[in-house]
Amino acid sequence: MPKIWAFITDFFTYETTKSVVVKSRSVGIINRVVQLLIIIYFLCWVFLHEKAYQVRDSGIESSVMTKVKGFGYHNNRVMDVADYVAPTQGAAVFCIITKLIITENQFQGFCPESGSKYKCNTDEECDKYLGRIITGACVNSSRGRRCEMEGWYLSLIIEKPLNEQPMMEVENFTIFIKNSIRFPMFNVTRGNFPSSLNATYIRSCTYDPEHNHHCPIFKVGEVLRYTGQNFSTIAQTGGEIAINIEWQCNLDESEERCEPHYSFTRLDAVFQKNGIAKGYNFRFAKYYKNENGTEFRTLHKAYAIRFDILVTGLAGKFNTVPTLINVVAAFTSVGLGTVLCDIILLNFLKGADQYKAKKFEMVSESQLQILLSREGCSQLSIQPEEKTSDDSGTVSLCLDQQL
Ligand SMILES: *[C@@H]1O[C@H](CO)[C@@H](O)[C@H](O)[C@H]1NC(C)=O
Image (cartoon, rainbow, N blue to C red; front, side):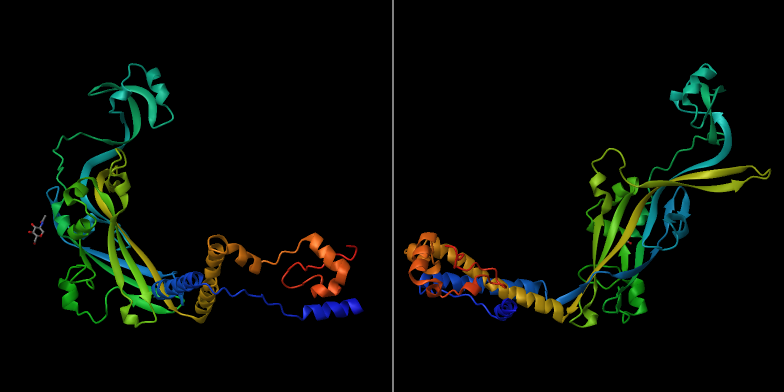
C-alpha cells in the first residue's frame, strides 16, 4: 500500500526546467534577431502569403461544354462544324481537323498486297506471312506476282492529286467554352463568365488576357500563339493543345472575385524532336452500300489539332483548426532561437567554459560516493523514493543504495 501511495504522490507533481540567464549583449542580440526572423517568417510567409489559417478544398467538381464556329475550304469542299470537329458532342476534349486524306471506294475482299515486301513466285514464299491477314496464296497483280491478302482494298486505284494544303481558315475559327465548377466543401458554384455579361458582348468578343479576360471565346490562331506554336506547322502535322482553366479562390473575400485564369500549353511538345509519333492524326471511315448490297467505305485520315480543356481548382476559407495548429507551430519555433544561441554561447564565445560550467552541473561517480558516505543522500536533496521520474524521464542523481 505505501508503495502505491508513493507512486500517486509522485505522479501528481510538476517539473519545470531551471534556466540560466546570460547577460551577454552579443548573444542577447543574436537571440532576439533569430526570434524576430522566425516571427517575420511565420507572419509574412506562412500566414499572409501561404494563408495557413485557411482550410483548402482542391476536390473541384467541373463540367465543360465547348462549341466551335467557322467555315473552311478543304479538298474542294466547304467544311462546317459537322465536318471538321470530332467528336461532335462538344466535350472537354475535341479535335479540329486541319487536313483530310480521303481514300474512296474501298471494298472488303481478297486482293494482292501492294507492298514490295510481299513479292513472290510461289505460294510457299507467302507462308511466312500467314496468320496475319495474308491468305498464303501468290497471285498476279498489275505490279507482278504478290501475296494475297484479305481486307479492305481499292476496286480501282484512281491517281488523283491529294490536296496536301491544310485548311488554313482554322486559324480564324473560334472556340466557345462554358465551364461551371463547384467547391463541394464550401458549396460554392461559379461559372467561367459572369452572368452580367450581355449577349451581344459574348457574341462579338474574343479572349485577350489583358483587355477581355472575361470573354469565353478563344480564337484558334491566338491560342496557338499563346503556346508559342506556328499555325501552319501544327496544321500540317496535327498536335495537342491544352487550355488550362485554373480556379484559385480565396473565399474569405467576395465570391465575385473567384474567377478563372486561363493558360495554354502544347501537350505533345516533348515529342517534337522525336522522329516518330510527331503530331496527331487518326483514321475514320464512312460506310455505304451500292445497289447490289455490297458494302464499301470511304477512309479518312485526319490530321487534327486536339484541344484538352483541363480544369483545376483550389479554394481556401478561414478555419480555426489550421489557425490554431499554425499559431502553436509558430510559438514553438520561436524557441528554436535558443538552439542556435546555445551553440554560439558554448563554443564560440569568450568565456565559453564558464558558461558551460554554469549550464551543466557535472557529477562524477567518485564525487557522488564521497558525498554519499559523508552526508547521505538527503544532502543532495534527492530522497530515495524520488529516484525515478515518471513524466519527463530525467535521470535522478542518487545512485543505488549499495553504493
Ligand atoms: C482570318 O481573318 C483575318 C481577318 O479577318 C483575315 O485577314 C485572314 O485572311 C483570315 N485567315 C484565313 C486563313 O482565312
